[in-house]
Image (cartoon, rainbow, N blue to C red; front, side):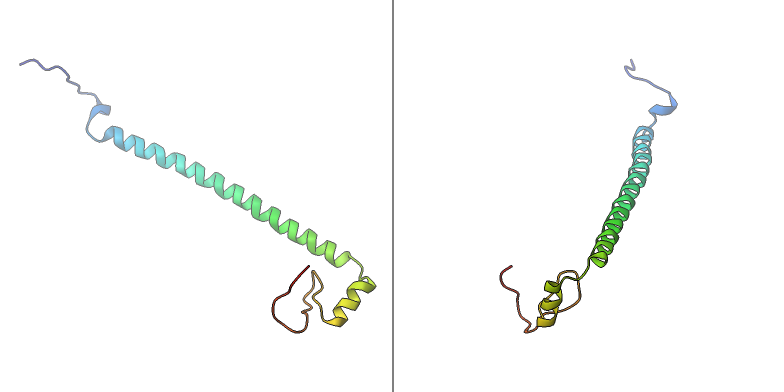
Amino acid sequence: MTVLAASSGLLVQPGTTAFLVIFGMGVVLVFVFRSMAKHLRKVAMAAREEAEAAARAESARPDTPDTAARAEDGARVPGTDVARRGGGRRTGS
């Protein structure tokens, strides 16, 4: 009987190649997830800084007579917690 393909190597055993492929994918995924977490932290920090900058700009803006008059009328003043009277939906801009 003639044996055409015979190997006795360590890496040619059943399942060894599949294990190495899965293990390699796991290692790659660890680095991908670490990178993703790093980028998400950057995005969250940038959004927080942008919100703080907008809040500082809003608080530094002096009240004009026009916004004070709208607040007295009960209309919603952008950037404040003053609600308009009457409830319901706001129509128009």
